[in-house]
Image 1 (cartoon, rainbow, N blue to C red):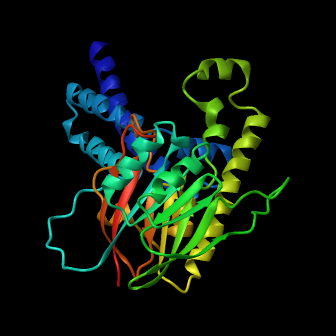
Image 2 (cartoon, one colour):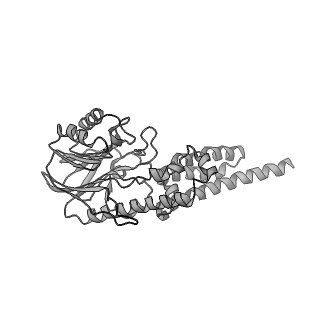
Image 3 (cartoon, one colour):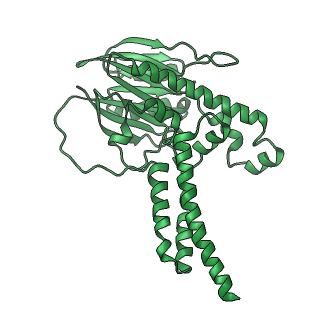
Length: 347
């Protein structure tokens, strides 16, 4: 009897190992290729990815105890799927000697309404020695930030809740028409600027589509049991709000992508895109641009939430006449986001 039970447990352990591998591959393919505007897709897209690592050591230990070491490959493969396609791990490139060339230093920072203090935020920006600074979520501190940045940058453009500071002349600044969506048109939440560089004109987009945070609040882990027991976690109202939020963000990304791809100038897009690494909406619309982290970063490049980041929402993208040669994440403790910094080699 004990032998029979032991065989059953060993068989169950092997089955669990295969099922987890199949499940994690299926989940990764779903969020990367098929997740669209549904509420379920949104929940899957913004789930913390770290939790998918937890079953791997547990299943590996159970396989060893069950004397099924030949099946350990499933957990090695599961680990690789979670770390690379799902979590977006990037290994550092080997050191290389960079040829001398003109580079543009770009910083993008969601400053969380300046709660950490305008002086501290601007001091960090100045230390970065950035040539162009894109600020998002400046609500409540926009004027103060503009005045502080103007002491270090000759050209500063202010828009509702956002700023662009540049060492080079900003010769054009435009805002896209409002996004058509029921029940009423909404802000596109990006601004287009033309910057006159020594090498020629550059189209720069400061991007910040609508955040999923408000629509996802009722799905947070904190208070989740109460939300489910009361029926507030998943009901028609919360589902509709989440789907509307997801659809609007997609339309905003499509709008900025459409304009940027039609530009006569080289293009940089920088900002808080509010889309994680595996977003199908991001890849469908912006894969024609270089992603600073994907070409020059290392590690996970996570920027949100700042204290324990597990999503890469903030980015610097560039069209291919340009070349991103450096990328970093910085500004810990100054916002609920980390800032991102890129070195862009000009033509």
